[in-house]
Amino acid sequence: MALDVARLKAEFPLLEREINGNPIVYLDSASTSQKPFAVLDAMDHAYRHHYANVHRGVYEIAELATAEFEKARRKVATFIGASDWRELVFVRNATEAINLVAYTWARANLGAGDAIVLTHMEHHANVVPWQMLANERGVELRWIPMTPEFTLDLSDLDTLLDGAKLLCVSAMSNVLGTINPVRELVAAAHAHGALALIDACQYIPHIATNVAEWDADFVAFSAHKLCGPSGIGALWARLELLEAMPPFLGGGEMIRDVRLDYFTTNDVPWKFEAGTPAIVEAIGFGAAIDYLESIGMAEIRDHEIKLTEYALDALDNEFGDRLKIYGPADIAIRGGAISFLFDGIHAHDVTQVLDQDGVCVRAGHHCAKPLMRQLGVPATSRASFYMYNDEHDVDCLVKALIRAEQFFAL
Amino acid sequence: MAGLEDLYREIILDHYRSPRNRGELVVPPAHKTEGFNPLCGDEVSVYLDIDEATQTVRDIKISGQGCSISQASTSMMSDAVKGQSVAEARRLIRAFKALMSIHESKLEGEGDGADLAADLDGVRLGDLEALQGVVKFPVRIKCATLAWNTLQQGLDEINT
Image (cartoon, rainbow over all chains, first blue to last red; front, side, top):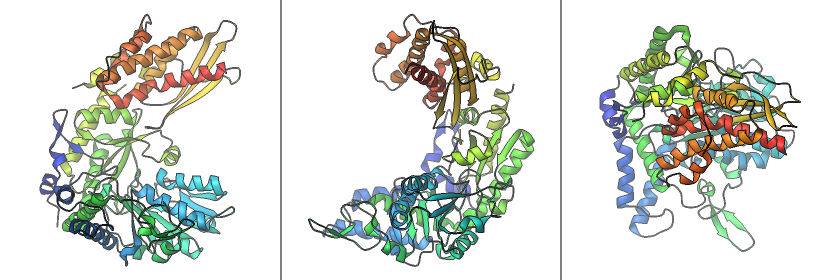
């Protein structure tokens, strides 16, 4: 069933505001998503009615807060198809999730002579932690290149994976929108005895996900891209991996016992959650999951496919070859992030003109500078969609782009 | 509300469309400095040929990519310092940064910028004043100052 976008829009208070006298057209959900009343109210309610620290107090509101916090963990775990809620570690964001793996599992298991396979389309969050490890330990980094069609070039995959210990790949590119074949990549990694880490930050908000079907080992994602609050994300990892991994940050909560000369660690997942966690953010995360499920992930994906197709057609009809799209043309293997560039007009300038019309798109390197270098451009503009966008938003984008092209015409 | 015309003055668009002093110089004797705007990925290379005896900027060339604001600011900067003494170039850097930050601090309500006004005193910025509109768009100030920071870094490197 088609989404009632007008009704959905009304559930996001920010989408009612104006920018420069124009109704806002928010097309930057790949960067971060807006928040529905359901999430805002759940967080407000938590602060007002049962806010206390978790896993500590024995008084009523502390027990309520703990119950809500742990309920949120179960919701998120179930949402991504985890078989056990203990496999879901709350972290600050996907970046921290990846760093957690780099600092614990990788530093315990990798050393000089070992190799990690990455791809040319990774976000800095899935590049720099591995470069830091490589610098420190002499680990070799290998790169899966990209085809001219903006997909991963898997022709040398077996050679690249030969002797590798870890494959790190994004499920969906934040720049190109490309959906990568995660199952196939994980299977290839496993065939070579390597583990697989999936950066699912762009994927999980938009497409129903099952980590068990992926057969992945580590999955990282953030709440703020799926209508949840900023400041919280999750690392999912197989239970036996988490149990064998050394702890990450040290402090309260992550311990079982502390003596002057040693400490023992708590059970997973709390072993990786030192200090007071983002309590209300976790509750908001859970509320966001409820919200997505109330709409339906299949419906969201279906809506975004249609909207992305509409946008690609509209941009092509209006601008043709003058506007280059950086991303796959095949809708089946792409999400709703569309990177583009006018010939001869810098992304920043285009985006500035769009802002005058209330159209919010991202301009820049999208935290993927290695990819931008491959594309041979310093920056692109990127419009990205979510369930609250409709064809009218796309029409506003096209209209604003016409104005931008005229303004900068040579 | 600040309009597009405040940001994109005609003289800026002119420098953007016909950038001055584009190119490279042979290194050495020239000195090359690279500047990056980590926010947007813009990159600029400033080639400086300094006459040691007279301490003047004998020649300057610019290469790199960037938005209209950073390109125009770079182009204007190269025009402004070419043939000038190193001391004058440094005065221009201070004045230009003051032009940017006086307004920045006013926008943020932190003082009236009087301390910075001294840096502007007696310096003729000419065309560069067209870039004043940038301060109404705080995110873009870094675009405008990229070339100037790179020039300053280059002069410092040559000096040491």
